[in-house]
Length: 61
Image (cartoon, rainbow, N blue to C red):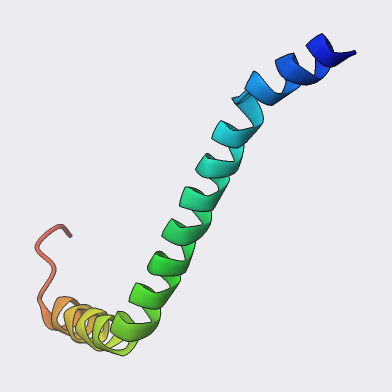
């Protein structure tokens, strides 16, 4: 029984999976925060770009 417990304590596969999960969670929070902070500026920029493109005469027809 003690060998089983010793082998279980040495196994680090679960710890690695938890670390990757924590990294993914932190990255998700960072992306959400960035979009929240930059959202209005990006919306304005894309609205202006869309307006400029719709005013440009099309030469494809």
